[in-house]
Amino acid sequence: TPEECTARETKEESGGKKDPTKGLVVEQKDLEPIALIDFYNGPKAEIFFRVLFYTTTIYTGEATDTDEMANPTWFPCTDLPIAEMKEGDMLFVPQILRGELTKGFIRFSEDEKTVLDYKIEPSTKEELVI
Image (tube, rainbow, N blue to C red):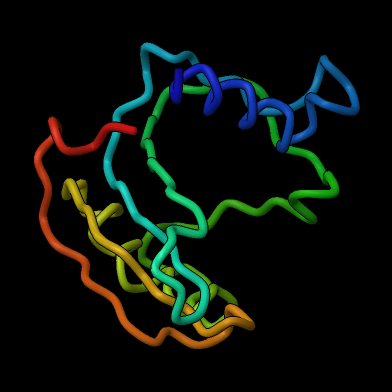
């Protein structure tokens, strides 16, 4: 399930892949779907990838450096390093941080650096499925 994948990837990408005693642990039952965003690269019609985002406030463990996540750092929601984020992130991250269910798409240039088109809108929980 997407929840199983999220729990596994959170653990692996936050340090548990290298050392099973490290990394963040989230339980599937504590994950709440918050957004479903389709990402496109270039003018092609096919979805490049679809991401179902979850939130949780319940976790154990600590993130460590990995190939996927260098120097993991916690930030207050009101003080995110926006200038360091990918251009499209700020189109939907504020809604997620406000707890708003969100859906939409973002089309990037083929080099993935420029947003060419997007639509971000409110969603229902029933729409947030893969």
